[in-house]
Length: 163
Image 1 (tube, rainbow, N blue to C red):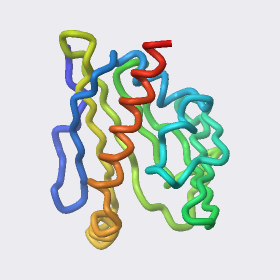
Image 2 (image 1 turned 135 degrees about the vertical axis):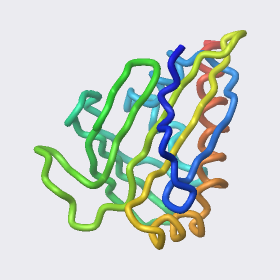
Image 3 (image 1 turned 30 degrees about the horizontal axis):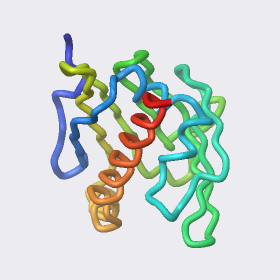
C-alpha cells in the first residue's frame, strides 16, 4: 500500500499524532465523514460538537460548530483532498466557493492505513503557515487533545462494531 503521509513534514510547522486504533480503517473513515457519527467523538469531553456539515468532496464544506465551556465557536473550511478510506485533507484557509478565510489556522491531513487484524494506523497532521501558529496550537494542547479525540474515536467505532 502506498503511504499518503507527506514526505516534506516540517517539525517547526507540522504537528503529528500517530496511533494504532482497534477498528478497521473503512469504519474510521466513515466516522470522520458522517456528521451523525462525528458529533459523538470529535471534541474532547466534556466539550461537544453542536452542529456539523460535511460535504466530503474536493471543495466541499467541512464545517463544525463546537461548544467549549459555554463558548460557541464555528469552524468553517473545505476539503482539499479526499481518497476514500485512506486520506482526508481539509483546511480553514478557504470556505465554500474557495473564498479565502481572513484568519486561517491550519490544514489537517488525516491518513488511515490498514493494519492486520482489522486495526488502523491513524496519522493526524496539523500543518500551519507560521511557526508562531504551530507553537500556539502546541501550547493549546494539540497532542493531548487530538490524542483524547483519537481515543474517543476508537471507543465510538468499537461501539458501532458491537452493535
